[in-house]
Length: 163
Image (tube, rainbow, N blue to C red):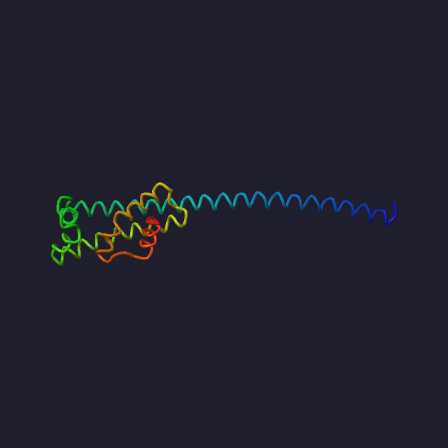
């Protein structure tokens, strides 16, 4: 066998080994991409779970504060259903300290609502919960506006539900 024939055979073997190496690399990369995608999805689920847990904790905190006699009394004073003056008149009847306490409570609820709107924009909120949030904004907006607590995200949500 001549050197030329040996070189040709070695060249063919090299090409064959090279093509197998390329195929093995492609298979390896496919497996790695799939694994990376699974890890990213798992990370997204963990992050969404943590956000949900924090949101629930925050809501529980608000409900626990509302359960306190002082805040519950303020809410009852402002939202008493049988008073013909309406919430604006009842709010004005509160003392200055009560008004601050009530406004702070309402502002906390608005922050929770804004957070829900933001999380919906990130795709972390189920549609049913978002619909409830929109309904809450629609029902509460005028009251929040009367208190001077509306924000651009809340206003945009309200205007979108009114359209």
